[in-house]
Length: 525
Image 1 (cartoon, rainbow, N blue to C red):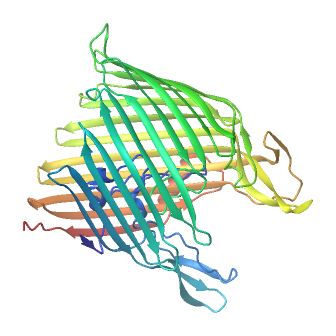
Image 2 (cartoon, rainbow, N blue to C red; image 1 turned 45 degrees about the vertical axis):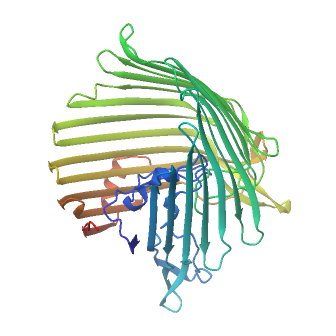
Image 3 (spheres, rainbow, N blue to C red; image 1 turned 60 degrees about the vertical axis):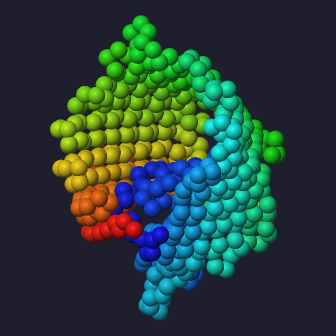
């Protein structure tokens, strides 16, 4: 149980650039929600604990453009939460979660009347999750889960499902799946259904594989308390895996897999069709190498135009190659290279990682990464059609992006009860659009009429997150944390990809520093 919890000692999320129509999944890092979290894992992800204490999602009143935002909370405050997890002697696993979050307000200033005011951007909410799982047969289970998210002034969002895991023939084969229902909506309540089933061959010395089907109706919605990339999809995947874990020739281990997938929506439009080949080998000197190749067949995209028609995505190929040195050494590292087509453009990326074990109790990790894409036709806006005011024209531009990120981690263990951890991520992302054009059909673009779109969608974002954590377990189960965090974020000249200017600019960006002392005491009652 917890009241008004603070998770200031938790490492910040890694900054990324997401230009897709899909939400980014961030892993849970808060200790209260991590403990026993595997009990709530299901194939369809009905419970995503990051929804509790999420970033406020409401909008604020700008008073017809006369108000300027001064402050907006980054997360919703958790007033209280309780969790119970466990297992009975009869083989029933139980998981219960309940949480209450408070109202959140944005602070603005009216530039005409020169007065400050607050506007609510998140209502008070309650979240409840019930999980039951029963062992059956021999090393198999059947389970159920129900969730409810209720926000003041809104209809509750409810989901429920049954899942199973059947292991057969001495765990050589397994059949897992889930069937779930959702009931959501504010103006019109809608019920959706989703199912996921997977048959796998897991055992055996050399051959494995699986086949998986996922079907999600258009009204299936679980994101009030779960995580779902998209609904309205039939998804079929399959693969075969060839492995060798014995010493053979000059290798210690080998793994090769071939996978293929296809997806289409409930209107029958094909959304994905591809195949991939991956392989990795560990040599006698403990070095590893991996490679992959894939091809995407030309398909339709039903989301990029933001509900304004379909877009044809051309066929593409991609290739990756990586090598990792012996991780047992005091100095080890790896290099990964990725190249391929990106819709009608191309991309390339490189990632380097190194680990330096200065002493047995001191370790340093550095991971720089650079990604570049060029001439990718991406949606920028839907504008009114001057020839027909009842329709809109999707506007696209050819986008060039540059992304650079470096993550630095350092760990020092003074004693088994005393440690210091350091984390730093710098991230730069810039994008420049050229050759604006109109989508005239799902398969073709045409010239954009002069003056129809006059905005500049170029961007340049910079951020840096620093976290230093001193931890002292002064008695078993009881800890003292001393934490310093610094967050910097800003923007530069839109479209400017110059590394030097972006690096210098991040240190000129405004920063927020937090010093925190957190004290835990464990009672054994």
